Length: 516
Image 1: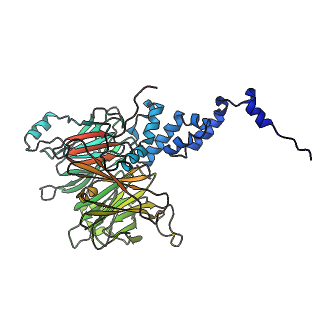
Image 2 (image 1 turned 90 degrees about the vertical axis):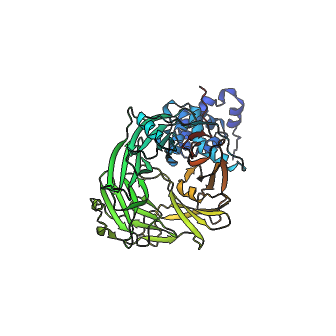
Image 3 (image 1 turned 120 degrees about the vertical axis):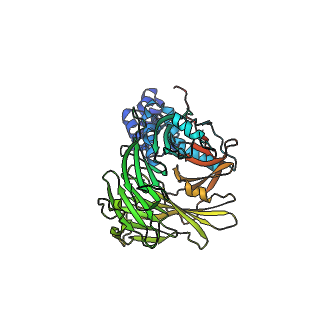
């Protein structure tokens, strides 16, 4: 056999005429292939890949790569679509914004007990009408704001005033694109009748509008309809944004807990014993309802997942198939027509103890309908010398157990657990504030006298048998005494409201504003 040495590779390496140039390496074909591959990578992974070779380095700097990456980050983290001005952002800003969730998580992890240092902060100055000034002057406290709710992403903030004679003023503010510390701008104002409280928000089906859910509770007041739920809608980046009422329903008694998903609201109604509590699912666009009774007490939290209701109780989670929607009999407060129903599944929480003082369930999704990533967070508080609580993260699995195909198509399975012990009285605040998904972590917030705390639990890719290693860090802005804190960790923005109603908007991450 005649074997000849193949010298083509060595000749190509030594002959300048046969050397591949960067332009040839970065051909349209290679570019398309590598850009497609990068669509399956998280932003930190794209940064790692670009260091491997010149071809990937060039490909990773294409605008389409980071425009796609930021869109995926916004979808995965449930951020409001108009959070960023994507068309006007530079390539560098797209890359920075896509990396924000991991940068903020790293800041929390490496804080080492030192308060996070803000890049910028400013005070929200209220824009008062003459009627508001008169009403405010007649009150002893005279504060501008009574409550806040930050829209996921951190660009838009809802504020509510104290109850005046005409009702409570609800305002939507544009705080500016995250990473760009601009002065807040008032977008729109509406007035909700007295005893009306903003409870939840959700995006519209197209992702460009915000739906605001409020409950009206006028117990001991001479009112014809003392209990009801309202839904308003606003498109903040439209030419003339206004609050528009799109649904209202009367309910027989107090609404104890409530959540919204798509066009449906699920709520729990506390009924005076011996009548059992009611769970109501309301499609506010078609004005149809479904009612059933959870026979083992009033749930602490309720969520909708597809055609199922997930109820959180003091010691368990239960899953119920939502009965068919019908025209609302609840308008007549006739709960006798409510359907008796048994749960499809009920299981004990992993940390139920005799010393448990409270259990809280949260849903991490903020989506128009089908969440991109679905996690449930359960907190259990315990009586110890210090405040102590356990965290369990549930992931909605894709298919039912094979031994019981009749169960719901997506089952909650414990991914991981974590434990915290803290000397501050954080329990009530952790109940108030919704956890957030950030990078590969869940972040919880609480406010205590003088500062605020963030607690971070890593999310494993698969089920963990060991307890996760949670971390915590402190937020402190001068002498501000935070009464309420709203966080958007995926964009590095925090809003703190003090006891006197002063609101501070704080950015812990900034975008490079230099023109390229």
